[in-house]
Structures are given as structure tokens and as C-alpha cells.
Image (cartoon, rainbow, N blue to C red):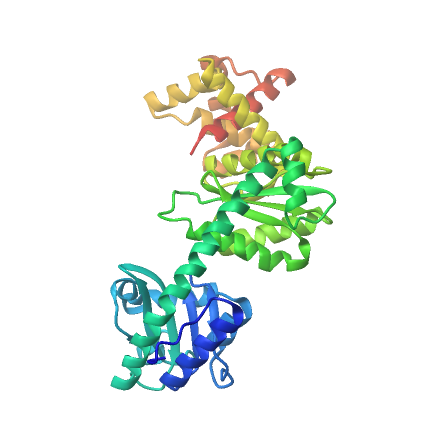
Length: 399
């Protein structure tokens, strides 16, 4: 290496680079990019730990090990360092089964582009530190090319996925250029409940979707318009829903699945569904579940759109319910809540009274007052249906 050897970013060139670094440091190494994706690794990993094996198998640092980067502010130190660091997670008690590592940041100018991770029993010697610094200098241009290529591929894939999401002839053309399996398709939309400082949660969730669904599924994904989108072939809608729910459990993002369409030309409808589900779940603050298929929330989604249309037109969609809500707010009464509990209990006054911790006669009095104040008539089936509908609309207006 000190003789000025150059390494290209082909698989053979990367392997040669990893072998050279491992030989100089005297330890098995991995090289990762700035997103904790595995670039390459050296042979001799037989005596490494489960964290190293899992990283090699998944080609990225698994989610369960990523919190270790926050131990002792290791992620912050790595981002600002140009010299090797040493991390002994066993000594700190953070991870008794993870072997100590020497970590060398790889930088291009002032930008961190990746890191070298060497499993070592003790803090690196002066010779090892010098070898790691030299290795980082040689790896920097290789990783810079890798990152430029990856970003170019991501931009091209994102453009193709946007074309898919638009449906029509453009989607048909894009599908022919992508590794998208033929047959029925559906769109999955992912979005954080609150804005994230970077797109990293979306990128990892989309990569996780690949892992959960299996490489044979034949889908494509990309980030677009601040959200993550996956276009997936649908062979079993129930399996797809299970995969998305599991992904949501792991990622904490809001996930929506659109309708299944026969081909790419109709994907704009599935995308609209998926966006609608995400907007509904976000509006509900996750109260209705943070992952859903459009068929499971279609009615609530339509009601939400009704609320939006009424707001735009300057109408109050709650009608008499809003009047009763104002009365309660001004006088400190609970007439609206009592009405809602009574209807939710199937008009069982005793059950609703127990839930409200009041006497049934008190509940009946409140129902009479609701009728007197806002004209809410529970004896008329049509009026009762309207009340229930407006109560649901009220719930959908809440954050």
C-alpha cells in the first residue's frame, strides 16, 4: 500500500483493498459507506462475532446494532474525526457479545464518506493506527466513486418510480425498463409521523421492505416527494398487508397500501390510495393503526375527504354537533361525550353510564338536554344516523 498501489471499485478491486488493509492491521475488516451499507470485507471472518456476520449477510449494519453508534457518542465522534477510534462495547456494558473494534473514518476533504472497522482485542497500536490512516487515504477515492455511482443510480431509479406512480403510458414504458415482475401491482407509501432530519429512516425502511418481502418479489422502490414508495407485484394481498405491518412495527413510519391494479398504467390510482391512507393515519396520529390497506380504511378516508371539501367550501361539517361542543366548552358540561358514549354502547344506558361513572338517570338527563340545545333526536333513525356520521367526522378532524 505504501508503494502507491491503486484500487478500483470493481468487486475484485474492493476485495484486494480489504485484504491489504486486513494484512496491515492484522485483523479482519469491513468497509462501510456513509449510510452503513457494506462495501466490502476481508476474508478471515471465522472468529468474528454475530454483529459482523449479520452485517456481511445483510450487506448493511442491522437495525438492532445501530444504537451502539450512539454509545459514548460514537457516531458524533466518527463524523468529526480523521484519526482511528477504539470502541469496546463489552467494557461499557452496551453489548457484551460484540467484540472490540478499531474504527477509521474515511474522508474526502471535510466530508465523511465511510469507515473501516477492524476487530482487534485491544486499542490499536501505533503501527496499526498508521496502517488504518494510510488505508483510509487509499479507500477514500474508491468510496467517493461508489457513492457517486449509488446516488446516480438512486436518482435514475427515483425518476423511473415517479413515472410508474404517474400511471398511463409513461408507467408502461418505465415498467419495461425496470426489474418489475409482471402481473397485478400495488403501491406502498411510507412517511414519518413527524418530519425527519434526513431521509435515512425512509431509505432503511425501503431496504427493510426488500428484506421482509424477499428478493423474488420483483418490486422497485424509491424516495419521491418526501415519502418512500414501493411498487410491488401482488400475488397475495393478505401476505403483502402482513409484510407492511411488520415493516411499520420495525420502522415506526406510517404505511399505506393502495388498491391492487392489473398493470402499471393504473398505478396512479394505487398511489392515490396509498397517499390517502398515509394522510388519514397521520391525521389520526396513529390512533387507528399506523399501517393499513385502503380497503380497511376506505370509508374513513372518504369521510376525511368530505371534511376537507366542507372546510374548503366554508361549511361546518359537524352541524349541530359543533353547537353542542361549543355549549360544553363554554359551560363545562359533558353532553357531547355522554351522547357519543351512549351511541357507542349500542344505546345501552346502563352500560354507557358505568363507562361515564354516572347514574343512568344522569345520562338520560344529559341526552334530553342535548336534544333541547341542539335538536339531536335519537328517536328518528335517519337523524340518529346523521348524528353518528357527524360524530365520526368529528373524530377525523382531531390531530
